Length: 362
Image 1 (cartoon, rainbow, N blue to C red):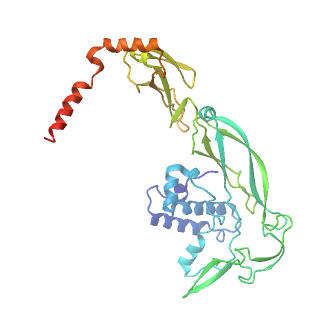
Image 2 (image 1 turned 30 degrees about the vertical axis):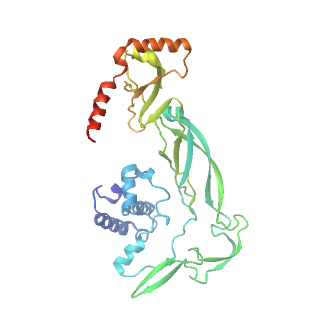
Image 3 (image 1 turned 90 degrees about the vertical axis):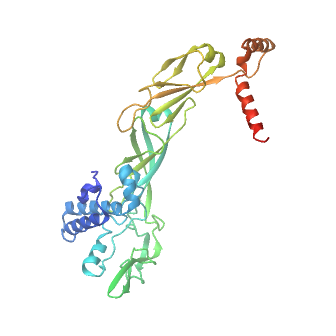
């Protein structure tokens, strides 16, 4: 079930860091599993509280969440399974850290990022696809330890932590020798070769809505990697869209370049252009300039959130002949001469400017 971080901490979106911290401490103490033994709802609430605090207490993560929601955040929120913040509260209230063995951590992020490339048409109109992914799960033979034979870690005594005394406080750190597992591997597990996990394959059906674009992400819940309780994280689909040779996209608008011969631009013409739904006709008036735009409202791409359609913009590009026959050249020269002084519109303007510049040096 998805949830909103500000709502779970019972604070407003404009709350200060101090207000967020105060709300977190209050709720974390209330729902901590040690105070609610066997209460699954309290445990789940505690995980949500910690996940929300991990994001909202970090300025960068909070900024990303405010703009893009959870989809903008990479990786698993809270690698310690949602209980990482309680030691800080315990220390603040009682002046020392608890020496409990740390909760087991998976050697990988629970969330998976999968990149997919779409054809332009698929992104515009939406598409259903079946993809195959690799995901990790804890090795059942060694229960994630990576060991067939092991002994207690001599550095931490099996606690997975070492404690450094600073004044009247003891600060816990992950054991550098066993990495928090509390054991020393004597012989590697022959199933996972010491990794502690195995790689599985899974086929996932995804339904991409119309209007998706490069850089967008879609969340598929419960299709990520497995934790020690066999619960899977989330799969994030990152989209890349191939460019189309005709249609150029900018957000929800579509641009089409319309090549028109120079005589058509001078004399006028009617030209049919492609659209996402078929075709449209544009009426080129006589003496139309290069770069003239024709707007077709609502002929663009559907917005992936609102469903409102963007526009189609056709841009005129005047094309000139690359080669001329002798007859064509003669006809153009006659046409050129027929315009008289009009063929030199720059002459009077530039002659005056040249005389002016010469006067600067006299």
